[in-house]
Image 1 (cartoon, rainbow, N blue to C red):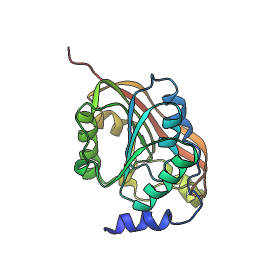
Image 2: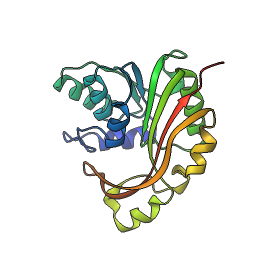
Image 3: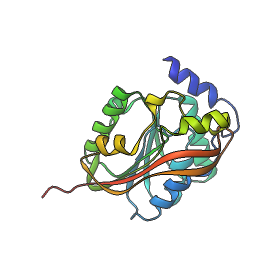
Image 4: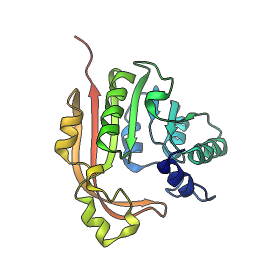
Length: 209
């Protein structure tokens, strides 16, 4: 098991849900606008967003590199009497099908550039034409917020963070439904607490004409 997986397993080893049990606000807001279908949640951690989607009637697939995250997510799903298909691994090694999903959500999924490009390419194939991607990610300006409050969370390497231009470049195959940088107040457990700078993005994969 690699060091990154070990780090996340350590973080998720407590009984407490370190980012809380409630869904991310932006994810909830955007998901509630969509017709119910099939959704994929990469880097899903302890399951708060996947469980919410399942409660709303979605067929939910999720994955993470953390086996401890999977255990916590399945425990949360059981608590709320819902089912999720949660796998441990990386997207290129998991058995998802092209155009399987109506929606994909990237909630604080921060990767190195090469891994991020691989994820973006994979998501595009897995999302059906007309499908929607929802993302909330820390912006490059978030570094300044971290200096004021270490509890606000997020990567401390600016190369893992985003600008509006990064999203426009990385997701140029999508129609942009919403794209903005915003200062928000995070109250997501002990590791996302305080004022943050985020990029919010909703895009639609174009149907083939």
